[in-house]
Length: 328
Image (cartoon, helix red, strand yellow):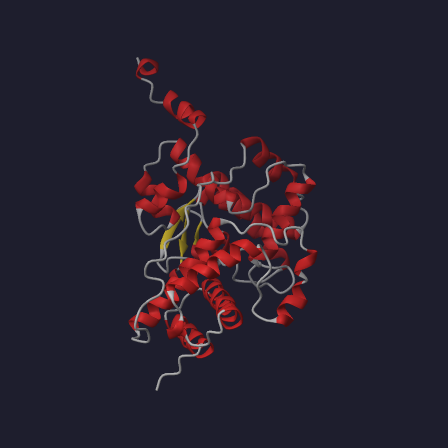
């Protein structure tokens, strides 16, 4: 007889995820969401088996998370003690619809898997829809702020020279930070002004090519010459400590520190460089199909939903290059 306890089925699901070669970040998101839900079911509804979960239990859980607020539910008491949630500034603040939708998405994947494995008589997630989530414009860094950022970095320091080259490359190619951090020297075609992104390093698990300008080529050449004086490594952007690829979290921390140090007011993350790339390409006349291929999206629809949030001012600027009267 199949073991129907949450613990057993979550473990089996995670093995299934491993067999599908999902990203560690994706698997961590699944496991955390499922363990949280399993503990809530046991403590609040006295449910220990996955086939006992009803749609009403799901809805009560989502409502409970909303009412409790941030950092009020933990997988274990030990985890709660370690994280000291009461010390957080946003403790008990409202959980965003986007976060709730992530929970819904993760639970739906799990219960759909159980359903397809003939574990359930009825899928409790079948009629649970995602919450309406007001669209927020993508993070954007102005020309002035971008210039200030790249001209203020001290390239005599290894880490800042490396981060300078990464920032320029991200801005000019639209790569994700994780893709950029794991680049190998062999992935670069400096003469052809392009980079080959290997499928094992891309979010969509497909090879793709991105391109860069002659200006960026010069930045890369200077950085590689600098790097080779101090390290022998196959990675383009290594850690000075051991030559391994720079950690994404480390680069993100440095990026935030640079913004604060240079007095840049925009509160943005490194992902804004990808957003900047996409918006500027659209503003400069690139068609949506080409942009979608470069960004590595699964479809043009994904690109449209993610990046067609141009303002009236953007459209006005874009219009000027197409004005019939201006062309006469």
